[in-house]
Length: 161
Image (cartoon, rainbow, N blue to C red; front, side, top):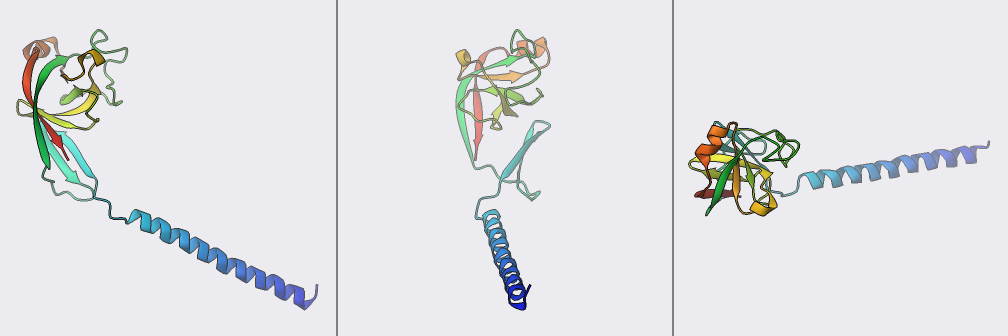
């Protein structure tokens, strides 16, 4: 191989490395620009001992709720039994296990919505049956608790962001 051919091969290798570096750097800048956009921080929320705590992403400072809407509708209670649910009575429609503070909500409310009934916050993680759409169904452990809840129209505070 003569010197001219070796020189051309080295020249193309250098050009390839430079062009590849520019492309790689450009893709990195594009990804960095996407991740540092001006999106509002995500809000995280959880129930602790019946109290609703809302946190902003990457901070421990509680966030003040933005809006509350008050509605009046029928509220009942349900147990984890196949007669009142389906073949998987301990798994909610959102895929979580049932828990104290969980509630079945109408289909127009997204999972994770918080509602307050009689001073206690509940997290919407299940769905009411379509024939009962528009009502709320609180999960309870025992038949005695369900009887205490009964079926009545109650004031419900919806937390919206």
